[in-house]
Length: 150
Image 1: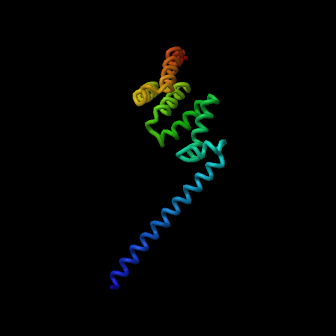
Image 2: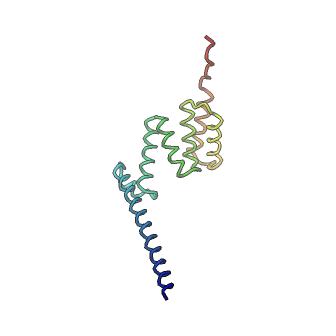
Image 3: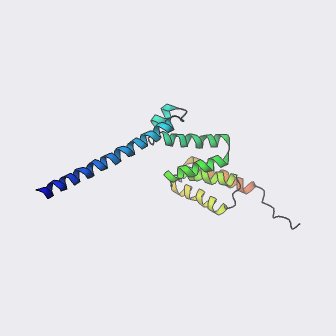
């Protein structure tokens, strides 16, 4: 009888411990969403976003980088978003296009990323536009001069 009571108490203790851990995780998540909601410019878009306010903030930052023409900010925000959606063809194309715009030396990786985005979504109009623009940008850009011997 005594053994059975200790097993029941152990089971209850485990369940209570798990409930506390789950509640603490929910409180932390709720706090991060509340903090992100304070920086969202349009609350209605934040509520509509299925991934929460944090994702809405990241989308707004990427949009701001695209509109402002700052490729450094676009690269930083696209890399952050690609951690959550590693096979998003639009994000891949945006990142590769921004890296080409900054004059990134590794053209093979950037062209491969554009081709991979095109393979994932061959009919996506935005991916095609970014890929064609990057191709034109590379085709008509001036080649880099080798440093002089002097």
